[in-house]
Image (cartoon, rainbow, N blue to C red; front, side):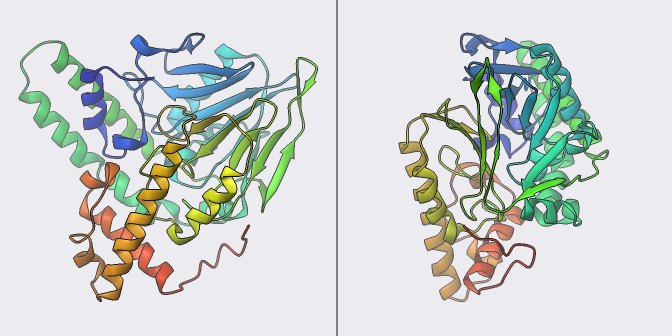
Length: 361
């Protein structure tokens, strides 16, 4: 699913996280069989299994989701970035299936994947790793990742307005103003957020046993080790041979601000032992080319090696960010975010522990 050049430019301006991490759903490039709602696109990647993208010309959701329909009910993976985005997601799901949503799986605790949790009905089981629950029970909105991304939104909007003002009247300027409206609405929606932790947790694996059209449809939730966060969960549908990976496996660069980069490569080894044909990432389009995973490996190794060299030289995180060759969306990220990435890496190198997470694969 590829955006047009013009729409891609608007999406790029909307938020720096979108660079390399969130795709723009463009109507011109919808795969065959995709269901389009007012706010989302649902690509049917297997019978009754949908890869969900937000329509970036309508709403800011910041991450992908998955819907798994069964004979009994429906399961959703990840809840988007705000309660408002999650409400739009639930409304869209109701257009796709009349099965009740009984489970919501959090692939990890980050705001762009889990801050819609509160919009799901109280009787829905919110499932995640114990680390995810622990983090969402803290002051997570004040911690660097959410605080830096959210705090930068007003500046993003100001930059977008300046760029729009410089445009000549026409379609492109209209699209720019629409993107500004979407981002302003998103910033208002952020203020509604009340982090809501999973009420069902796992440490290594869990299987939800269901059927679809009378045949077994097991849904496997797997914690393969620490990587993007301390509690990443991938959702494997073994019969359909597909896996939703959240941010543990993306095509190329990934956010590393709360990562265990030194352990992530080993976790990817375990990931590659799974049997699947298609990867549904938390950001970007689906892919099956494992060269994309190799690119992620190279990105992680490059960062770790450069951060290690800076650490050995005794450079402060503030000094180190000038020595590191930043890749992907991090190349244009604000210094505060880069500093947080280096601080986190340094803490791993110094052996600082994570009291909330004692689990390992």
